[in-house]
Length: 218
Length: 209
Image (cartoon, rainbow over all chains, first blue to last red):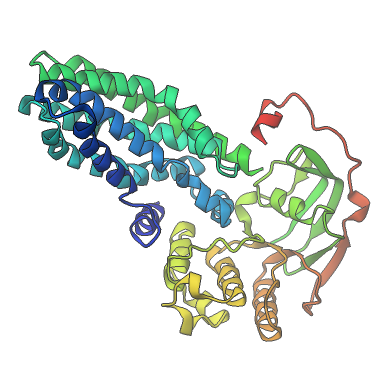
C-alpha cells in the first residue's frame, strides 16, 4: 500500500507533477487581495479568514482532475483495479497523497500569508488548526469527484461543479472558526463540526470513490 | 492453472458484445482468440480480468488469479524502468524484479526513464510486469504490438516457461507465436445481436458513460 503513496509523491515532485501548483495559486491570490481591496488594515483583517479559506479551497480544486485522470489515460488504473490492493485503499491513498501535496503545504504556509492580510495574531492558531482539520475533507471529497468523472476528457469543469456544493459546509465552518478566533470568541464548536465532517468523509468516501471507479472502468 | 467460462455474456459500456461464450483451458495450455477488429476480444479479456462484471454466465475461476496486460502500457513516464517495475512488484507483493528483468533483457535500461524508451522497449517493460504479478492466468491483449522478431521470440519463451510451470494464458493476437500447446478459438459465432442494455442498472444511464 505504501508503494502507491510513495509513487504518487515521487510523481508529484518530478517534472510536470504539479506539486506546488496549488500553493503557488494560494500565494498569488493572497498577495493580490491587498492590491485589489486597498491597504486598509481594518478591512483586510476582517476579510482575512474568508479569503484564506476560499483561497485554500480553490487551490485544492485546481489539482483535482489529475488525481485519477493521468492513471486512467496511461492504463495504470485498469491494472491497479486488477491488483490485490482494494480500490477503496487506492482511493484513500490517492486522497492522502493529494492532501500531502496540496492541503498540508497550504496549512503550513497560511500563517505567513495571514500576516500579509493583517490577520490578528490570536487567529493564527485557529487558522492552522481549522486548515489542518478541514483540508483532508477537501481532498477526500475531491477524490470522490475525480472518481466520478474519471472517464471524461477534460472533466475538470464537471469535477468543480460536482464538488463545490460538497465543499460548502467545510468552508463555512472553517472560515467561521477562524473568524471567531480572530474576534476572541470561543471557536471550538466550529472546529468540532469541521472535525466531524472530516471524520465522516474518511469513513464513507473511500467506498463511494471505489464504487464510482468500478463503474467508470467497466 | 485450469480455467474456463460457461455461457458468458459480456458488455462494453452499455452494449452487450458477446453472448454464450463457453471454453475451458487446461493448466499448461494457451488459448488464442481470433476475431476481426471490434468482435469483442478486449471485452472478453476485460471481463476475465474482473474489470467488467459479466452480464450473465459463469467464470470457473477467481479474477484474483488473472494477470491482465492491456493495450495501454500503464507506465509512468517520469519514473525509471526500475522504479516502474519495483512499484508493481510491491503492489503485487512479489518484491523481486530480477526474473522479469532477465527474461525481457531490461538490465541495460534499468536507470532509463520510461519516457525515453522506444515503443518496443515500453512494450517489453509492460509485458515483463506479468512476471511480477505471480498470478497463474495471463490475459493478454495484443501483446506483440510494436515488438520486433527477436523480442517476440523472447516473449514467446516467457509464455512457454509460464505454461510449463503450470500456468495458463489467453491471448488476443494476430501473429503465430509458435506456442507448443496452443488452441485457437474464433469469437465470431458468439457475437451478440445489438441490443439495449438492461435498463434497471442506474449506473448505465447515459450521463455516466
